[in-house]
Length: 147
Image (cartoon, rainbow, N blue to C red; front, side):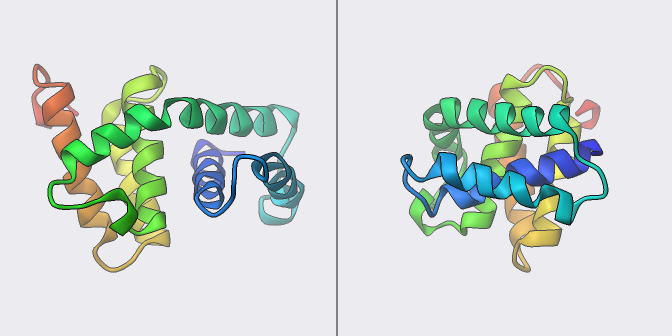
């Protein structure tokens, strides 16, 4: 799978996670993995492992990620945000802060693209604004044009 397809699968699992209990998620992850071959041209054990590993890492850091979202989304509560937008933000912030393989600029661009594809009319600008605030707060030494 391409990196974008891997990211999309992780996003979808995060979205599913918002509607299921912790006890239900292992089965939900398994069911989702069973559909990968139907939705993408090629998947292999390495792709599946990557998706599951990233999903689990995001879950492990979700409390800290959600705190950053709350801090950056002035006037918004997490439970009032679209589940699509929230899932995209969690993925992007994880990539920006915890994944050294993904440049910050790429994480933001990919999040905006996911928002255009899966979100509402204002999702892309909403996500871009929140991620911009995260960058200004977390990476003040980096000029925005370099990101």
